[in-house]
Amino acid sequence: MKKIKMTVNGRVQGVGFRYMTKMVADQIGITGIVRNEADGSVYIEAVGPGDKIDTFIAAVKRSPSPSGKVDSCSILEDANIENYISFRVTN
Image (cartoon, rainbow, N blue to C red):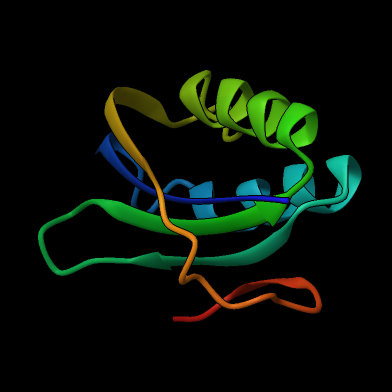
């Protein structure tokens, strides 16, 4: 299992980004969380097999929301991320 945390910057708040990210995660079979941050970014924790995580990252970088636009994305592997049961929007 691969565990990552991502911070996504760009036009990612107020455009349905979190809910579209959840839809993509559910389709691919990824668990984790997505939430808005006070600085305008979106924070994601994702857990799943390496190939599915790679597919998920690519989808997020393209912006799952048609109205959104990803300018930058930082990704870190973190073995300490919990094993989530599902993918959910947390705020």
